[in-house]
Length: 121
Image 1 (spheres, rainbow, N blue to C red):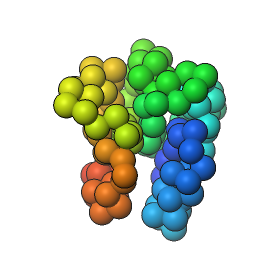
Image 2: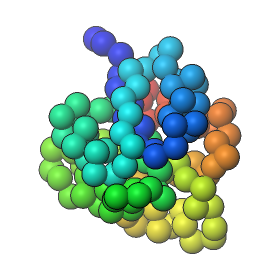
Image 3: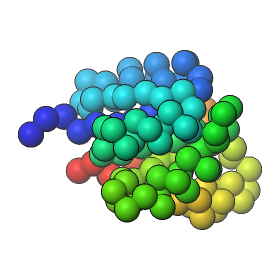
């Protein structure tokens, strides 16, 4: 069995690079720079997990997550919101949009790795 695939949807190159450094040895990392591209890549690649930034141009992560979770071929894919939207209520909103988990930015590397492993074990 090949490596599990993680799709990172984030408009900030710094964040994509960080996730690649943290997880690239253990998983195949795919990247998209906005929600619309994220949906397209999810449809094409069928990743095992999606790390979704919520605040992005073109289409934000809330909308992209709702669309992914409404697609019967994609809705089983866990989505972890990775976001600087760390106000009270944001985690609840992220879960209502369909996110399965939530990691605030700045990213706690150990927490992110633990949550990724939880969904991909």
